[in-house]
Image 1: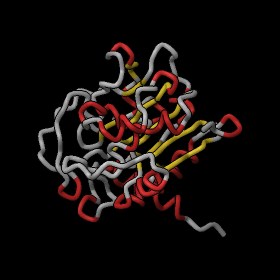
Image 2 (image 1 turned 45 degrees about the vertical axis):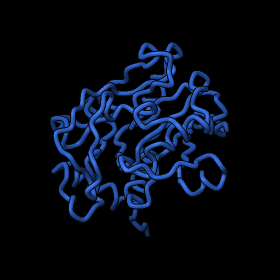
Image 3 (image 1 turned 90 degrees about the horizontal axis):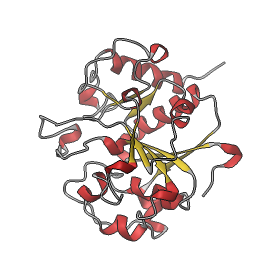
Image 4 (image 1 turned 90 degrees about the vertical axis):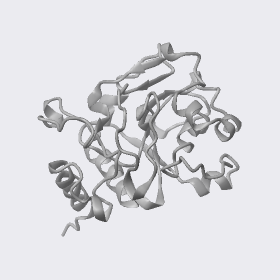
Length: 239
C-alpha cells in the first residue's frame, strides 16, 4: 500500500467506543496539515475479514486497537514510512512537521516517555497496565522496511508485552526519540504553558480517557474545553 499523490500515510487506532474522538482527530489533522494526508482507521472487523487479525480479546487489552497498530508495516507492504496515532489524540499543529523528523537511521521513532501509572484503572473501568516503554506505541513513525518482523502471523501470536516493548526489533538502538511535544499525556504530564505555535504540545493525548466520555468531560481542564471547541468546529454547518 502506497499513499497517493505523495500524501502522508496515517493510520489511526479505532475503537467503536471512541468514534467521536476518532472523528475529531481526523478533522484536526486535516485542519492543520500543509500536506495531503491519506488517513486509514484500523477497524478490527475489517482486518478480521481480510484474514489479517485473528486474536481473541486479551483481558489486559484496553482498546480494540491494542495490537492492530502493529499491522501498519504489513499494510504498507513493508515500504516507506507511516504514522500511527491512537484515536484519543487531538492535533493542534502541522503533522507534516512530525513527518519531517523521519530519520533513516531508525526503524521506529517515538516519544520516549518515562510514565509509571499510579492508577489501577482508566476510562470505562479498563485495566491500567504498567510496563517499560508505557505509551511509547501510542504515536509511532514506522520505517516500514525495517519492521519486517511484524508479519500478521507474529502480530497474532506475540504477547502484548513483546509487541509494545518492541521485542520485534534487534534492540533499543533502532528506536529514535521524537520531541515530547508530539505525544503530550493529558492529566499525566504537567499542563502545557504555551500553545503549539509557541513550541507547546502538538499532539494532546488523553491516555486516561477523554472528554468524549460522559463522566470525563472535564479531563484536562482547559484542554478539555479545547477538545470540545475542535469538535464543534468539525460539526459546524456553514451557510
